[in-house]
Amino acid sequence: MKYEILYKKKALKFIQKQPPEQQKRIILAISRLPFEGDIKPLAGMEGEFRLRVGDYRIRYTVDHGRLIVTVIDAGNRGDVYKS
Image (tube, rainbow, N blue to C red):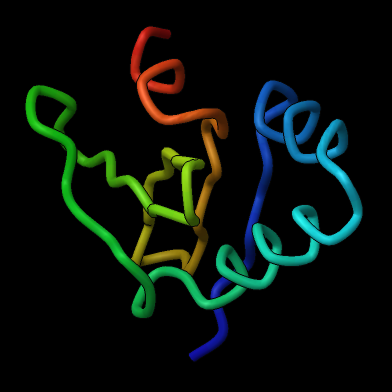
């Protein structure tokens, strides 16, 4: 099963600002969602998960019925949870 990956504007902006090597690393990690990677459910945010990619964190949700992963936010550790 291949999940479609949708990016919110905020997440896409952060990824595009990164150096090319970091962009590749983040996008590769996101492409493996929702089953691979350092993934944990977020406490207090039902249905949201986080993916750790080095010092970066990716917040996302998964719709298993429609096979869609929505990347909500991406950012540095700590900053990504404030929004």
